[in-house]
Amino acid sequence: MKITGGSFGHKGSAYVAGRVFAVEGVTKKDYRAADIKAVDARVEKSRSFGVFGFIIGALLFTFLGMLVFGVIGALIGFILSVVGSFYTTSNNVVEVEFTDGNRLTATGTDRSIKKLIRFAHNQ
Image 1: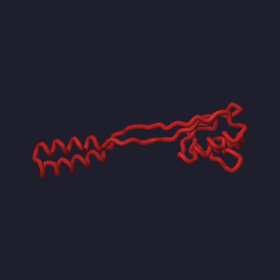
Image 2 (image 1 turned 90 degrees about the vertical axis):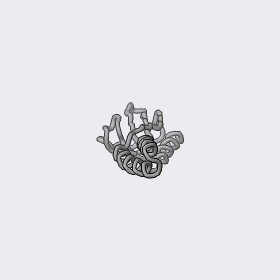
Image 3 (image 1 turned 135 degrees about the vertical axis):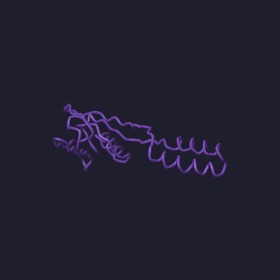
Image 4 (image 1 turned 90 degrees about the horizontal axis):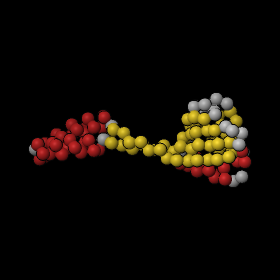
């Protein structure tokens, strides 16, 4: 998992390695399952507009729409390119609180976060 914030800085990595949760940020520390106080996971989604895809789509669909249906087809093609240019990205975020007071915020794959949650609950 990639560290994005907390007591260990905003860069680095964290991973479950056998019987320890290794944190390698500004400082390095290994935690046992009993040292993890709380784990909170969530998915953050953001919606964005792709300008490059819009330009290509607008040129292509407007031209094809005009060839097939005339001006109305060009308008429909333009509207399709606008609608098709929106996209969504998802990030899996986990916040970990340790018994020594340190905190960690990280992003990672669904699999790595599930592995951390299973590790933390096997005290």
